[in-house]
Image (cartoon, rainbow, N blue to C red):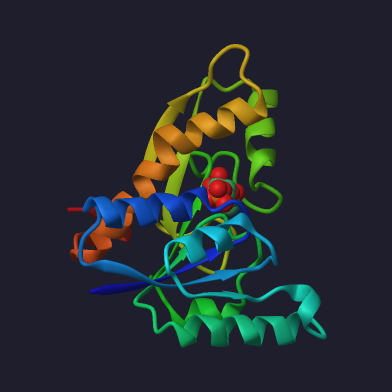
Length: 207
Ligand code: GAR
């Protein structure tokens, strides 16, 4: 059984997609052992209590400085003994120590087709604003392993989504979630749970 720790900062619709996929049997041999939120009052925490999932809050404002918060975050993750850490809308830079502790055991969902519209400053609605400003006709989402860079780790799965005339950042965000994020994140977790992620010549693929 793959033990998953999910890190969130907001609404937690991707967390919900994982919960639903486990309930429906679309994801098997995996369980959410705990959720960590970087914000008090995040709706993702309500989803945890509704589903009997243990949760913790590690918010910067509760600590003397970033170093103390980082240490608390590492301890909170370790307390759930995860085999896999999933960043599901976690809008905080991960401590380097955490990344080193879990090599190729941390995945992130990003709301664009990496390497487009990613890196520092590209998160949440901002990504979709930049997509619309640039006028691209296809966007999407990416699940990748987390390394020490921002959105630079090995890509595991991507799904394209059409940009439609009249899209707003909000309408595009919702379509990218519905058509891509909520599908590929559970799909990658299921693949990892079943040992189907393989590496060849430095690139990763799902067998
Ligand atoms: C999602 O669109 C996710 O891809 C994005 O934040 C949103 C969180 O929504 N993540 C990033 O931008 C990371 N760079 P959710 O809380 O409803 O899952």
